[in-house]
Image 1 (cartoon, rainbow, N blue to C red):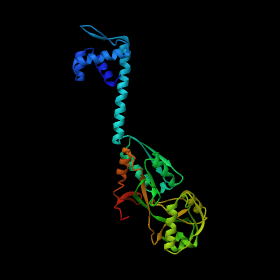
Image 2: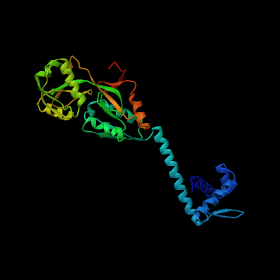
Image 3: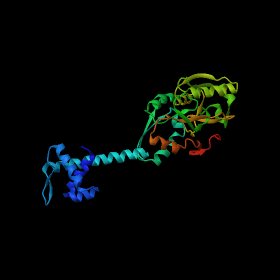
Image 4: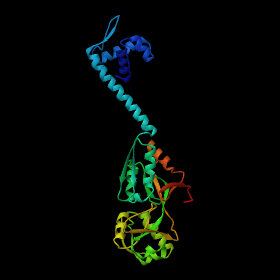
Length: 310
């Protein structure tokens, strides 16, 4: 039994006339009659009582009509839904969330995407370490993730989408609070709380590189895997830190200051599998303008600046 058999049957059942049904289906009457006979033979029952003057549904025919309409309606919905997903109008996209994503433009990016495509199902997976995104991106559990540029992610596509400024963070009553900018060399004078290299190798190495460039040695008190833990320890007065936050921060008990001279920013890249053919992924990348520029922030408002001028 094929869907066309059901369409032919429903047309005849609604018209109760083979000629009119054939005209409605844009076919001639003999093939239509043949298809209905084949359907009755396959079912092993008569669906119509035919006389020279009229066509009537049998009792089994009336029941079969109800079910046939349901099947055809379900098939139409399946086609419409599939086409909608193929266009990227609906569907689900799964995004990997970095441990420090809340302090970046990522929420603004997702907001822009959801505003433009309101029918999608967005799933955000919060992962304890940035590198935890790599395996899910490779096996299709994540559609897109975000990693610091330089993170090893063989087999995946990476494209820089925004910059993270390195800022000093310290307790509110710290002596640095009187300064508008913190000299980089002054960092060596204080107990330092840093990123654990195992969990955040790019950020750890970034800080290590600028220390080497300025010929300073940090007084590392401890290293932790999570930026929220860093903020908590700094707030408790255990030390200071350097964090890659580009979103203006207001956190009780903490102060944030730019460094002098400014340090090279941490570049954050969108990451996806080259064989991921999700239409929603393509639209997400279009909204981010991944190939067009880096997302920067002016106050609380995201805007784009050309690559190479961040």
